[in-house]
Length: 115
Image (cartoon, rainbow, N blue to C red; front, top):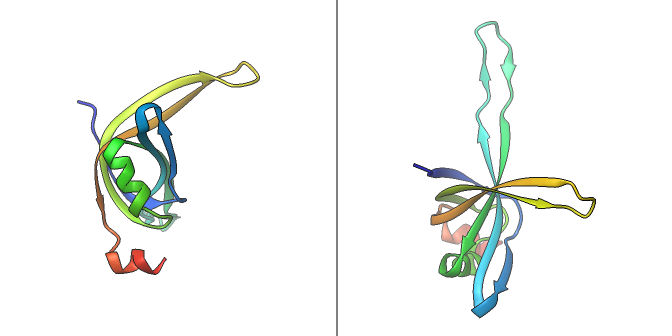
């Protein structure tokens, strides 16, 4: 089974693109964090952020375009996908993305309207 579930904050406003036949796609960066904790010897391990690249398609991408902004808290479910490409210098690069199939906006509507 290939399923990812994340809750995090949007790092910057979504990047929206319209492809052939007016198919909407949206790319969002999402920050999740591992809480800080203290080891038995008293050492404090700080909070650690992790960044994720999310891809939305079609109707879900249109919802993202209309309502999602930097700083919003989202719950997403999707599939982990890895792809490769060759950059301008001829080096093969790998990108890991989450293709989102479900999303729930966790930021209260009032907070979104104030931004």
